[in-house]
Image 1 (cartoon, helix red, strand yellow):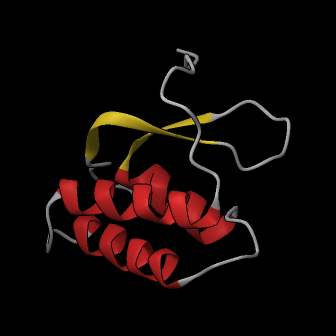
Image 2: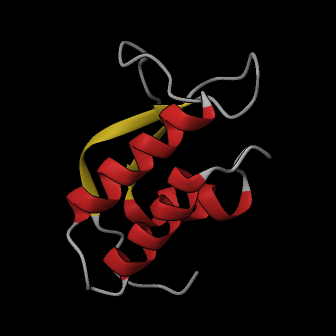
Image 3: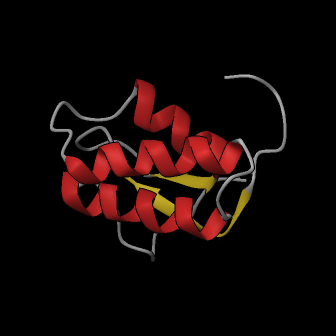
Length: 91
């Protein structure tokens, strides 16, 4: 993706894309878009499509960051990859 503001989330969304792997703390819209486009599980439903659209529109300056956060979290719930919020993130 092209460079530019990453549009940080107010709090990270933790997802587990690999079974048994460490959860990933997704901290901004650019990271969310990258995961949705390149690493998302094969089961991509309507919330995945909505999240991709929201993230790309936020990065283009047409929507608010909270829209990307909400859509990404909904896509993670739909795909069954939302990790518990008690998981600590590196860094």
